[in-house]
Length: 166
Image (cartoon, rainbow, N blue to C red; front, side, top):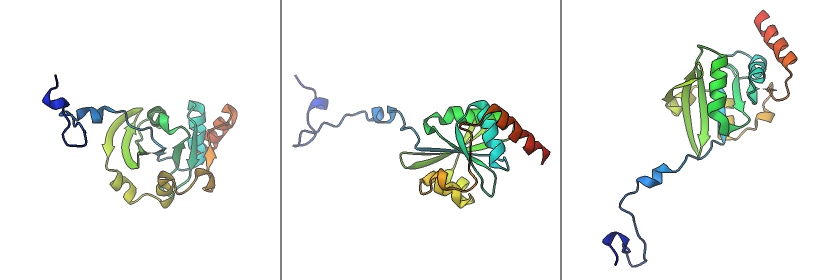
């Protein structure tokens, strides 16, 4: 015995369920790019702090400060939390590209504060930030990039000490 909900809706035999909410329950695709925009002036101290915290990033210089391109975009929440904890009360903006969509969020002190309109965040952003986010530029091709990967504790401490003297 079949119910009306089980019967095909048209002559092709397609059944359309009454409740479509299950379509929204699917987990979001992992981000293909994750960038943390900071107020750190230079890439070397940012890379050094991330090396000490165990966050794998490539620090890129921009006109507005260094940005951290996460090596593992899937770990964006952990990376954003760690970087925003390092910078204490300074907010950071996390930009992600996921399924062709750009999202922006503000983090402070290791916690997610609020989602931001990505268009407004990117409206005055440096061109290199937009190029990295959209994937039109590879991080290795940007001049002045400093990576936290492979940076020794000694080198990281020296970089941070140099940054304080300036």
